[in-house]
Length: 322
Ligand SMILES: [Mn+2]
Image (cartoon, rainbow, N blue to C red; front, side, top):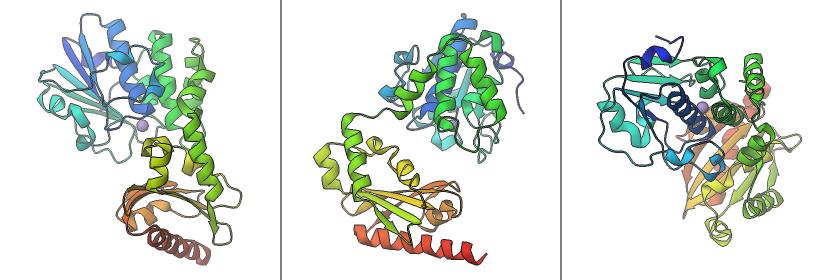
């Protein structure tokens, strides 16, 4: 069951809770905040609250971001709406609030979403939850702050309108949002591309020490725990490194591994299309998509690299035989 307009579910509702997934990304923060701002602006009699894990400071440009509740309470909402949540167990701190709510709505774009709410507005072919949300708002009611939140989510989930999920409709909506006067260059720079000095130093180091294997079709970057401690960086500071590795000419598969604790490694995989990296990740107990996947592995760094590259090699060979 889908909705034509969000107003359908807001009738005779007095309290609304909104929640996103664990470790909220740009699409999650953007969609939750856009919906929050929309309800606050056009349904002033509704008491609306948004619950999210601490959003990153890069989303500080979104209006009222400081009104996010980062801890759950024991309220019972008339309606609870989830945005960008693919499954019930991804709800993070809002899980109990969702359970207790009198009615629930799920707005999402994950293909894997089975529909866990009373009303499920899920469109698996659309690039971002923000784009799905825009489709059930009145376009003329999308103010500059609401447009800023939606644009942020679209930019993040499409890799700045680059991933194959980007459609003509995505671009049309982005154009409509631009008409409200959003600072679109700044949103892209400051929330997506910008790195701290240290983050850039670490990326530079990983690129400098990267290794090319299999006739230059596979590239590997790595970071040991002691190097992370030296720079004072966490896993979240390493976003974007594997994407940069993938952009090496001739490369089919990029792999970035870093040590989360001694002899435990987080592996990120990116493909330019020939190899389905989700198969590689699943083989090692992880998951993901054709072109972006990941898994966790134990052992020495060399074992991890050897095991994964062997599996990539197998897949590349299979591809060549096919
Ligand atoms: Mn999303």
